[in-house]
Length: 363
Image (cartoon, rainbow, N blue to C red; front, side, top):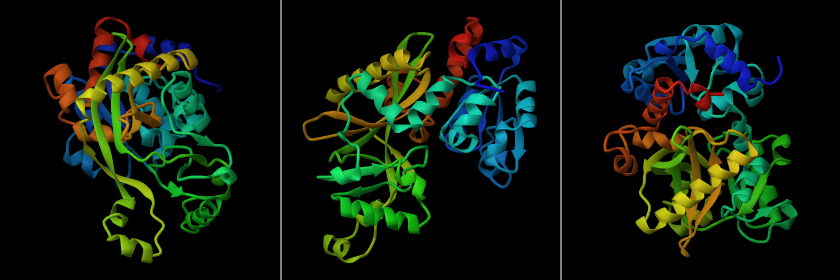
């Protein structure tokens, strides 16, 4: 049907019963706190769930309605969309929604109102676009290599899309790059077509802070709601071995994210934290209107010069928001109550309904 634009969504909203909005998402990633937060703010909730994966949502009782599908990608099927629209649904996107529904289908076929900016999801998935958002905002980022033959120091190699670190690796030479690519292909983690899209950047030695922001388009304010660091397999298991054993075993460590734990950053670094968040929001407003509306994450490393260096962004609710379902130290400072990212999203929707400003926060 061609690219869905904001006018299509605003037309659809005219038929919605604004007093009976349902908040929905795909049953994966960050859906527990998205739906729980919506309930805390008084909304009905719905979950699109793959058969066999409904147990956590039933046990935690976060959904009023279950739309069961054979596979996650069915969320963009016409019958599922019709059901969502009939419930006056606003969909909250997250990493699994983007990965399973697919960017093309979200942009061209998914005629359901979405919180935030559906156009910016492609900018986080395509490394060159992601980099442009950061460089145009003058945010400090790692040096990028355009070809494996240029590798002259430790580099981090990544691949496009929301793949949770799968296939990422560190290399220090062109030869090591080629060897690890072959090892990843043997494991079935990479295909030949992925190799051409390898993103090679300077390996920054530092501590990892994934910073979770919320940009309120209603208030024109960037909020810091929480921070986390990641548990990554198999690198975390690998570095627990004694050094001599690390040298002897033939393991090629990977960076697959298996969990998250909450973190707080040194207070004196919060000035930089707010600064890079503000800069990214401003560049997004210019490059991909209406910008970073709602949750976003800047994945950073802090080096021993105390520079906060951003190496990746998420332009929607990031997996690390699961670490503050009951609130974080930062959301407590801001709100004085248990404010998850899901609840913050729901509160923005609630305020927009009350003030008749839904068109500002939906696409």
